[in-house]
Length: 111
Image 1 (cartoon, helix red, strand yellow):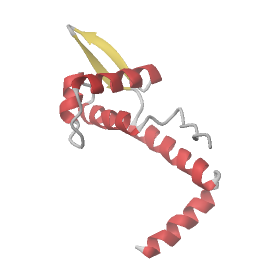
Image 2 (image 1 turned 180 degrees about the vertical axis):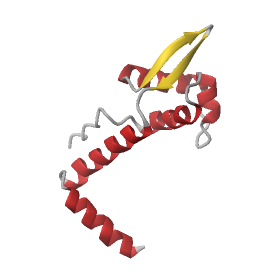
Image 3 (image 1 turned 135 degrees about the vertical axis):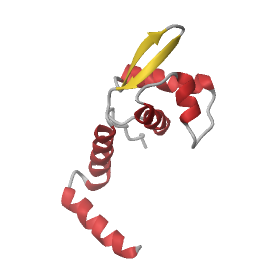
């Protein structure tokens, strides 16, 4: 069975973790993003690769400052939230907002 194609608007989870740090910092170097990732301890080169992928995707901007690159988020937290909800809506509810609302209503009663 072929794997479902991921949304181009929504970065993978580790890239989102980098974005969360950048949203908090405003902008930052690879080291600052690495240090701000409290949920996982990743190698410097891994964080650098994740930020480079975000830059290629157009989600962050990169600017050279001395010997380091400084990354600034171009996508807002709300834009990423909208993309995540849209992906979930499309993948699990066939784009039917009423179906999602009904699911949330019934599942909230279960908790």
